[in-house]
Amino acid sequence: MPDDIAGKPAPMPWPEALSWCVNAQTGRFKHELVRSLKSNDSRAAERAALPLIAEAQQLVDLARKALVAGPPTELDAQTLAHLALAHEAKLLAADEELRSKGLGLDLARGLTRPDGLGMSDEDLGLYQRAIAYLNDVSRSEAAKMRGGEALQLALDRALEERGIVLHPDDPAWRQLELGFIQAQRRAINGINARLDGELVPTPIIPAQPNRAETLSEAMRRWVEGAVGRHVSPGATRLPKRSAPFSVSFSCMAISNSGRLPKPMAGSFAMRWPKSQRRCRTSWPS
Image 1: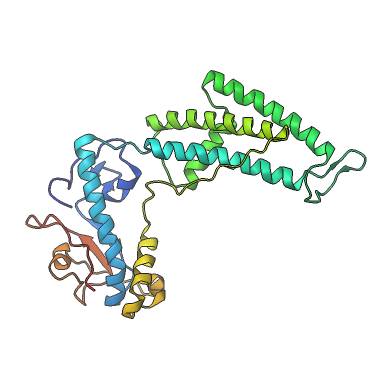
Image 2 (image 1 turned 180 degrees about the vertical axis):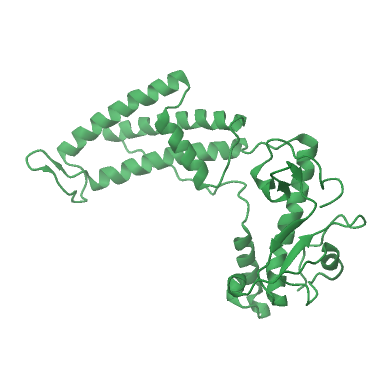
């Protein structure tokens, strides 16, 4: 790591994205970032190293910002709005699916298997009573501006599905709770309108904003773009099949040549020499 970051105390709580470059025991930034390439093949190591180098450079930039301004907000306003809209759409989509399939309720014969052709009169009556109860609950939560246990579980599940970890003291947590309460009210209003015969469409969720590209996605994208240069389409699976081997190389070696020297395969330790603050991440054609 660069001298202005290595060994420095990390802001508390540090963002989840910085976990790789922070020593959890000491709470300080690491001096080196080490990630095994799990390969003793030089070409496989070159392919695997590129996205890791780019990720490491992004982490360095993020660490510098965290040292100057403290930990960044985990969720911006756009992401908060996206999560709330996704919750509303999920409730409306579940309602649409349930009403289209039916419950299979038959008072003469008891509960039977739904025929998938919509709701019966018994289904509709039972469902209307259930929605009336949920309507009262959601109105109470909106009045108190405090989510109940079911809403908290939905909030936790939404964050877990997206790999987002919030510190309990993060203000984004409270903002997200209020957003979910409002989204739930909109969804139940929409369901009630549907039960009155109105046509209420389920919102279309746009792509999640500011989603970081994973290493596997970056490697797959690189391989797909490099197939014309005789790179195997299965290159993204090479590290899984290769025997582990551990060699370190300096960031300076990549910065000078743009390629890894043949012996330097296996794993790498990112080092920023005093004279070299930036690492070249472009790949020669």
